[in-house]
Image (cartoon, rainbow, N blue to C red; front, side, top):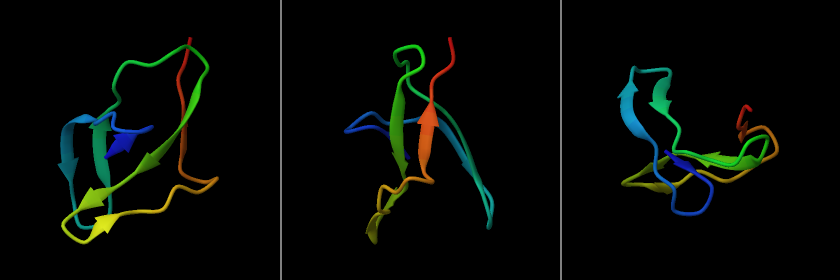
Length: 55
């Protein structure tokens, strides 16, 4: 999982239907695309795959 360009998540834990990760540090209230990365490639960044950092 990446949060913005080249910013990898940590603590990745996945089941057959979902994944839980820890987002890397980011700027308060900024929005970044979240993408899954695996051997098949990288998922597309869409308007529904955005993470907003809290305050």
